Length: 263
Image 1 (cartoon, rainbow, N blue to C red):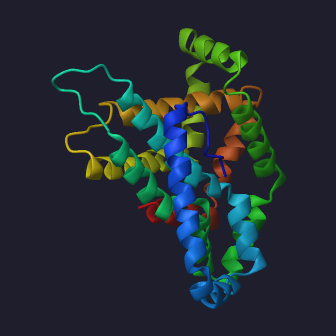
Image 2 (image 1 turned 60 degrees about the vertical axis):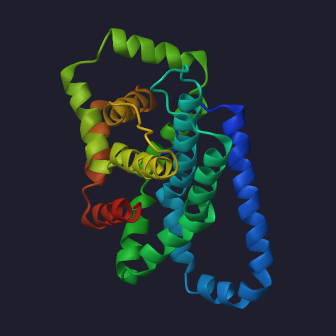
């Protein structure tokens, strides 16, 4: 599965608030550990090694980071807005409440448990097929390319490529292949849904706050540009096969279920 924790710049103050919220959540969890320890062990024991491996290999655990980074980015942008009569500000208490509420549902452990439960409800034979498909060398190679792209997103090389891509768009046939890969994998749709979760939370805390008008289109563009970079050396035929791999019934069903689970 396409990795979904790519470049999102954040401010230090935003990071600190999210860290504080996560730390507070961890402290509360520790206080409840003794009372819930036996139940937690039983719940975790319900899941098999195959289910844990499937969730790990899917690359979907990083979606919890995407939710956090999206919130950090949106709040950072709001804090950078010049003051004016129509400016909607986010104060520290609201900022902390947003971080805390998102952490309660979207910390990696909570998201992992939701994914495990989703997989657990599938027949064992289906789980095995999905795991086999995720372990295919072509999918594994695709994930390595994406991880490599993620690792250089802060480097000048990445930005240089983005500038070149915007100034000299690729052939229409190549653009269509990358769009098809995004459509088949549901990559940008998952990112959009994750950001929609964040938007809903911010709007629930801050009256009058609105996201950027074209945020969905901007998100899709960011994803497509990332994919162009990740697969810049991948031949068209191989890219087409990667896109087709997501049409396998079991894998396709799995990702559809995940997209529904985001809400």
